[in-house]
Length: 217
Image (cartoon, rainbow, N blue to C red; front, side):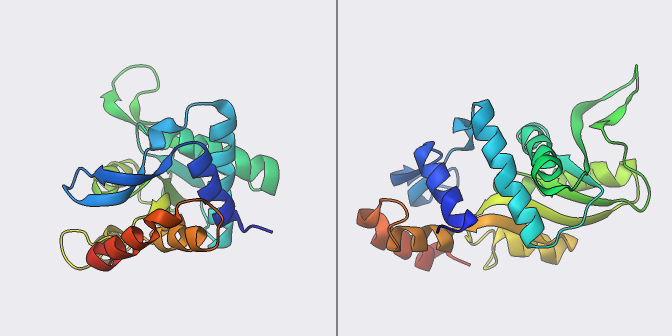
């Protein structure tokens, strides 16, 4: 029986979110794999994705009153995770997301959804973390709204790559902000899934290992 991590890797491959081949990343690095979260486009996909995030949330014992989805990619992720937690796990949490511009009429404010209050526990839901830019942008907005405790950030894939220095973006996030970042899967999980035959791609296995050795943190 497959673990939820293995099922998620199969899910990504089947939906062409995780592809193997020869890719040039935004960083300029040549990579044997590519993750394109833009391929998630249907109700069934986002429902399944929310369940994987919910399983990661529960596996790591994350506690939160509200899930924050940074605009724009984080919005459907936070909503679908909140739905999955309530519907399938009996855990009812709020959700909210930031506006790109503060609304000065109607209810106003920077956030839409559950109001953040002093002392609340908050978990941030995002797709992947490459440089930590999304976290750096959302934390000041949250702090401006209320004095809350950010208990975690949950992402789909930890690339486990070096950031600006020798540490990964995930490690840097903890060092800089004290925020623990949990991922549904890591690059090492993907390598092991290929090795175990969970997904095809053995022809890219050595390239994956070489890339991990060169850029891994």
